Figure 1 (cartoon, one colour):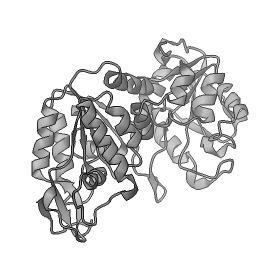
Figure 2 (figure 1 turned 45 degrees about the vertical axis):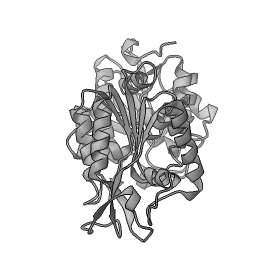
Figure 3 (figure 1 turned 90 degrees about the vertical axis):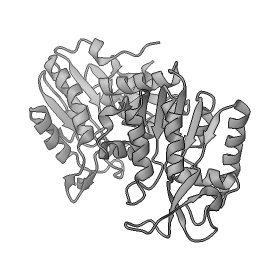
Figure 4 (figure 1 turned 90 degrees about the horizontal axis):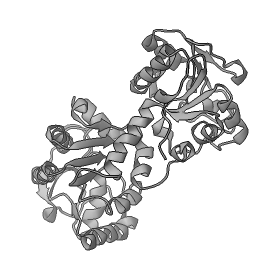
Length: 387
């Protein structure tokens, strides 16, 4: 059953409540990255232009629920949103005061200041839904959370729909999961196997090949019998890594691990590094911190054959030089490919944006945890509520 989209709803003269993800990073009383605010502007601007009044709701950080805390206030977000929208966005603290006439945009204070939000309290959900005649879920990044604003209010609203940001996310992942152009290759990196075990397991049923890099690969290398020195590893998951490798083999799916690695005594800038084949890694205090040139070539060759690629997680400690070469080469390879490329996960997105390659990717996902659960085959509460 197709999900109703905001673009197909008549909003003229109505109050539209939009659940956005405005959970922006802050430091020393300033917003350090306003990407999520900028992403919300087209949805809000178009809704205002169509003659609606708009009430925006979002969380910020993890305050103690039910209590106001100045450091988690959306005051700075309201100011930045005003600048970007070109209209005054008033910050409202009390639900009873949250009223918007056509052409007006207000921002409700951090919804985690309201007791019951994260516990999906039905009474709070009812109050959120009653703020307007149309309720829009446009925050894919929290679509995997069954909260009052993400699932409860959607079910209680008289008209509920997805906004363009969330619609774009669902469309991009449908291209990957429903009927992908093949071969489909998934690159999984990052630090911990434990956060992505379900993902790896589920993906083996749908991918043609799986590339494993980053800290996750260390656990798999250990499972394959290689030494990894003092590298990041999850010893209690070695058996699971072995099981996944055996499953890949039984399914006839390629699961590629690093052939060579870049090592150093510590993860710090300017370290002296040495590149070794994985068979030559010593059992000492050195750490694996990036993939080596042979592995870069292996991954590039695999990706050149792909028609669809999903990338989640860097293949090295790219934030610290000199351990970013592998991730940069991977990003460039994806940018140059003719495949439909979906990049998800905060670190992967930060990498492609940092390298100036974001516009060359097929789709940049904003939903880290939600994207992972979607790829795992789980039903997202917000999506289930909208069907």
